[in-house]
Length: 372
Image (cartoon, rainbow, N blue to C red):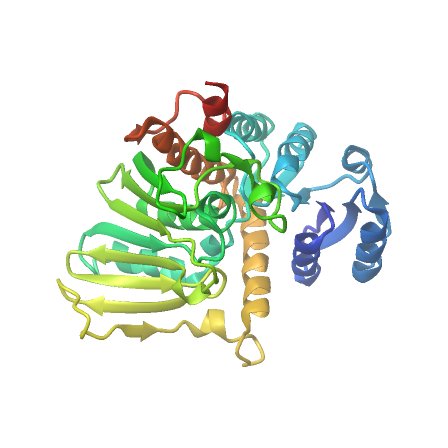
C-alpha cells in the first residue's frame, strides 16, 4: 500500500483539524508543516509529533518530496501556495473559499490541470452520506421531477461576510443537486431596509473583526435567486438574524411528487415528505443513516467526531481521485464555480438585474464597482 506524504501550510485551528484527520488514515503520513507564527508552529509540531516545521512553505515544498499539500490558510493565501504546489506536481487540498477573485481561481484550476495535479476544495458537505443518499433518491424519481430548491443561511453574520464563510458551503450544496448555474438575480439590502450600494462595500474584518480575511464584501440582508441550466430554480435567504441556528441552515428540495429537507452545516438532519403538496399540518418523515451517525464502536457521533469523519472522507476521496485519475468530488472546478455564484450575487446587485454565467470579467465585482 502506497503511503501518501502530506504537509500542511497554515497551522492554526483548521491546520489542527486537518492534521488530526490525516493522522488517522493508515495510508497517509503527516511529514511537515509551514507556519509564520513560531509559537503556533512549535505547538502544532509537538501536538502531532512532526519535526519538519518551516517558516517558508516553498522551501518545504522543495525539500519534503510531498504527494499532497493541505492549505487551510485564510482566503488571501490560498492562491500562491496552490500555484507553487501545482508547479511542483504536488496534489492540493485547499480550504474554502477557493480564492478572493476569479482571476486567481482560474489560474489555480488551470495550473493544476497543466501539471496533472488533483485539486480539491474543502466543501465538506459533499462528503456527507446523506447527500449521496439524497442524490440517489432524486435519481430514482422518489420525489418526481425537482423543480425548486429553497436554501436558508444559519444567521449570525451579515450576508456579505456569510457569502464568503458559510454561504460558500450553501451555494456549493445547491450546485451538488442543481448542477451548473445559468443566471443569478440578487437583492441585497442594509438592515434599515435600503438598497446596498457601492458606499456600503467593506472589508470582511471591518464588518466583523473576528471573521477570517475574505476581502471585500457587500450587504447585510440578502435574497438571491438562481436558475440552473437543467431548469431548476433556487431561492436563497440570508436574513442576518443576530444569533446562529445550525438547525435552520440547509435546503428544501421540492419535486413534483414530494420534497426533501436537509439541515446543518456539518452533521445532517434529514426529512422527507411524499405527495404533490405540503401544508403546515402534514408531517415530515425523519431519515437516519447510522453509518454517518454511529462510529465503529457503536457510539453516537457528536458534531466534532462527525466533522472528523467527513474530513477523513474528503482525504480518502482525493487519494482515490489521484489513483483513478479523475476529479475529486469537491473539485477546484466546483470551488471556482461556487465563487462565481458569489460574484454574480454582487454583480447582480451592481447591475440591478439578472446576470448570466460565466462572467466575462473575472475581476472582483466589488473592486470594479469601486473603480467606477
